[in-house]
Length: 226
Ligand SMILES: *Cc1c(COP(=O)(O)O)cnc(C)c1O
Image (tube, rainbow, N blue to C red):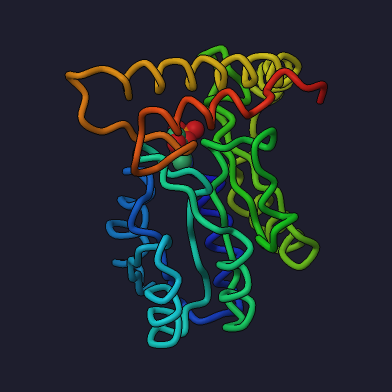
């Protein structure tokens, strides 16, 4: 959460103090926006980031300094079109921040699709052992100096032991992530075919589960060498 807070700070240092954020976001992120940033004078507006027209309208009206979205949202697993959102942000001279915690760099690298700053919780997939908390910001060149200066001034840096634990976790991250993706496909396919389940939220097929879901899962080759 500190990584996210720092990224938003770096985005708004020299831009309009206004954020257009996705409606589908992690609960603590909504809390950060509404309960901490808004009372400090930053205006916050939510839009459905799966509806590009709605985002364009919000951006035209708010003239935000920053757009914020999750690649795969927590918990509803909404997947957005990063490249199109990046163009909207760029045209409005807003920084584009992507929380890539759920996707991880193995599944998506938003910087390559036009994001300015990508935020990860290290606590989850990347560290993977449930024994360390941390965050990371992957930044473009434009924001890196502000981020470094902010880190020095505010002091959220990970301690040496936590850094060690996070690096240890990252060594096994690709193996764990591939297996977790395979397992998720099997669980989602099983649930989608279950008569007692009427809706499955799964990125392979957002709205209509059952047979296409199974096809989408088996088509994806998670066992390919990295
Ligand atoms: C968990 C989570 C966070 C916060 O991570 P912490 O390591 O608990 O601070 C931020 N964004 C998303 C999408 C998350 O799932």
